[in-house]
Length: 269
Image 1: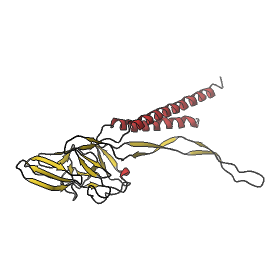
Image 2: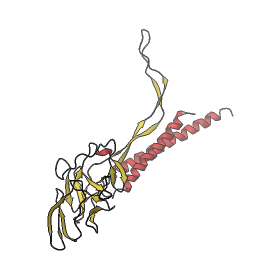
Image 3: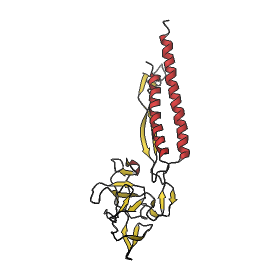
Image 4: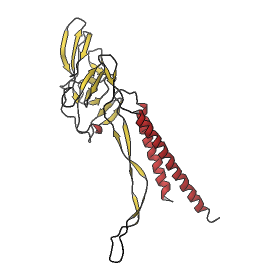
């Protein structure tokens, strides 16, 4: 069978993967704290038709003759760049303007830790500060944030992460907790878990020391704002067009290869 048939098929398969990545980005264009992805291609094995040879006394050098065997996805990379900030006016909507990540625990005493850029938080019936999945937000010491069960009258969060609140009974608690942020040697290497959560991977490296908002590049916390998706629809639609055309071109390669095979089979007639 001719090699171009399989090269075209590999192009179709891998352009479909690229389209899957683009489709997921577009679907999450309004997902709070979402970070886009990008599929990268690389060529695959080459079959050598004629090997290279050096020039001799009576003969010039010959370059190698090789035929490529298609394409494959080399990687799907995360784009963890800053998303735009949207004003919501809600005091527990928190946006990070910088490189830090919120530290979350599924239970108060859990050793498992997740990371997120989604900043939609609530106070539950036991006074814990949790996100939309019920996971506990951690402070700079790695503990959970509990504001008690007296009821909250007012609450403010400063740019450096300090939480101050007043209870319904009139008790004022100034700088009662400070939100901790995480950073990593390679934040693009974090592994996605869904529901706006990430975890460390071998390439991301372990979490660096829990940082204080506003210091050492961790970023500031902006109360009353949410970080929107960093997906740029202009780039995504441009990639969608080139991916579609790439798929069509590879499909045409398969069709043309089939026609060549048909002509070969018809030689005997």
